Length: 581
Image (cartoon, rainbow, N blue to C red):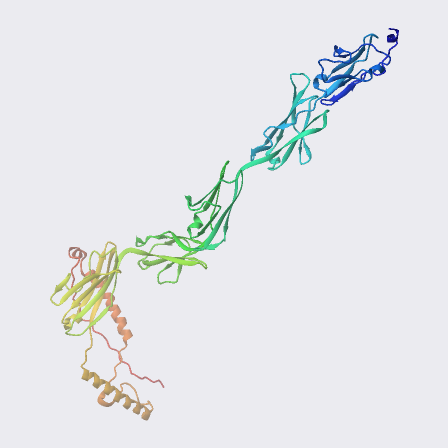
């Protein structure tokens, strides 16, 4: 007993920190002490002596004879986290209390949604990583491309045992700061695992198909082959291609390529490619730069307008490249307009006719459209003022009436015949595309027919027109006379040339005499024609005033004779050869 009183601790347990799962030994050495040694855990004895029944992982080790009573723990667990004492019962000694701190590494961190986190393009990224069952609580950091990402929010909570904790970290990344394919790491660490444990996720940004529609070749002439290629980037992958032209589906094409021979419609009707993936569809369309000749877009219409009114034609063409429009009157080289609209101000009757709207696409082609302008106005009559007919035979007088609207009062001649045949006279009226042709036919021409002045008159709702016509006798000589005159002329020519040679033309004055007494008379036609024009105008005015308007109203289609005095014609004579000294 005395020796127990002198016993002392050579080794006492010290505070230790150990990672769960590792072995640990708490030393206790009392040299010369051979009594009972107890190990106390948090105030409770583990057992008496070296046998620690109920604690299979615990054992007292060392040389008992030397007083070594070390406590060895295999695979330290969290329950071993306690205060331990070594007591010598007979010596009434107890060691200092030793704190055994057990560190527990966190479980492998987990990123919710991993290992691949998908989000839609344009959406921000929210990641959550948790590290559980750690003692002390784990610290979490986020790493991307080797750099720590700041701004994460942390939270931690104790588990039911009150010793371990779970840590949760939330990371927010804006849409503009994230790219598909990036790898983001979550690393959790505490004193048990200073280097930490980590896990990662791959970012998968999903989006609608990104589509590009190419057209080759461009520009292209109408009638040539064109290839459309619809290239798409999509996540998830493309599931379907659809093609359309001008909104109408092209059912026979289902791939990413469409080949077709193009016409002018491809210039205005776009070809579209619709690409679909599980997120939805993207549609893109392209027009083709097709070169084609002029095509009518707004067809001009023929017009019928009143005299003095404006006439407006509208003509629209399409073509590619840009076309040039030219308005002209048929038969005239004058360009009236280079615009779609042609305006004719205060039209006259001579403006009536065919007008052409012509379009030209340089180096491609040209086209034109013809329209008619009809001018409503008084009739206009055209006729030869003098007709000829042989005495005793058939003769005709014709006049042509242009009238829009058509004449409602027909032509009249110097006869009471309205139409058909009466005696020697026949009146025939024929409508043509350009107007009305009225013909008076007289059989067995008599001298009185050459003294009569004929008129041709037509009326419509806009007015009237009159033309004065004369009938002249047509010369008809016997064949013998014609031959005699020809021979005489030839003889006269020979004699004349001989005379000129003999007298050197110095004795020729006045009237020329030759063999057979032939006299050459030259009529000065200019003076006579001028006189006839004066007579014509006088007769036309007389014609208008001779018949009362009321009489025309009663008998619009009758032909009225006019008695006029015989007009004496003057003949002017001149020498065939007049030489001045």
